[in-house]
Length: 318
Image (cartoon, rainbow, N blue to C red; front, top):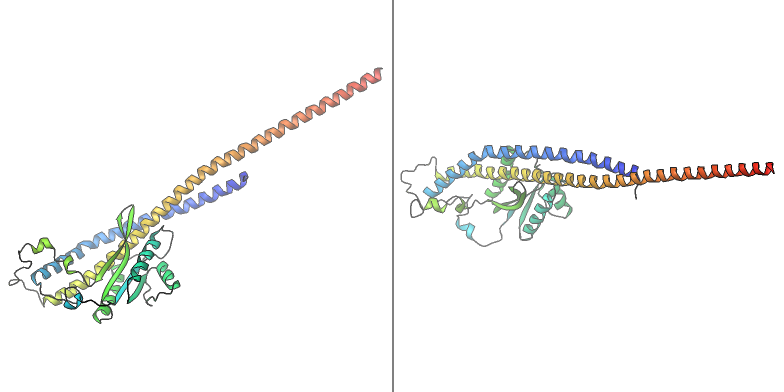
C-alpha cells in the first residue's frame, strides 16, 4: 500500500489534469458552436442555389451537363478514376473520431481500383503516409477554422481535374453530427452531382409528365452556362459544409472525450480520497499504539525501579 505522501501527490496530479480537461471541454464547446453558427449563416445561400438548379433542370430536362450524372457516358461500366478526399483531425484527444474515419476510408479504398487520395488533417496524413498510400502532394490543408475560401480552393482543384478528364468522380469521407451525442462517418459523392437529388419527384409531378413547359422560361446566356456556374458554387457549398461538419464533429468528440476524462478523474479522486483517509487513519492508529506502548513500557520501568528501591530499603533495615 502506498504511503500518504504518494497518494497526496497522485491526488494533486489528477486535480491538475482535471483543470486541463475542463478547459479543453470549454474550448471545444465554444469552437463547435462557432462552427455550427457559421454553417447556419451560409445555408440559405446554398439552399437557394440548389433550388435554382432544380428549377432549370425541371424546365430543361434534356440538358446533359458535365457536372451531372445524366450523360450517356456516365452510365457506362468501366473502371472509374476516383478522387477520394478524407477529412481527419489535426490532433488527437478526440475519442474514436480519427479512427472511425480512417477505418471507413481504408475499407472504401480497398474497393477502388484507380484512385487519387487527398487527405485533410495531419492525423490522416501521418497514418496513410506511414502505411505506403500514395497521398497527393501539395494538398496540405488544415481542418481548423474552416472557411469558404479554403472550400473554394479545393473545389477549383477538383473541378479542374474533372474537366480535364483526369478523374471521373469525386468522393469525400468525413464525419457528420447526427445529434449532440452521436456522430457517424459518411461517404458523399461530390462529382458528378446526382440529378435525382435536384429533380424531386414531388416537383416533377407538378407538370404530370415530369417536365415544365419552358416556352416562356428564358435563361441567359444559356441554361448550360448558368447551370455550370450554379453547380460550381453548389459544389463549393458542399465542401464548405463538409469541412464545417467535420470540424464540429471533431470538437464534439473532443468534448465528450474530455468530459469522460473528467468523470474518470473524479472517480479516481473519490477512490484515492478513501485510500488516503485509510492510510492516514492507519498511521494515526499506529502512532497512538506506539504512544500507548511507550507509556506502558515507561510505567513498567518505573514500577521496576520502585520495586528495586523498596528491596534495597528492606535490605538496609534488616
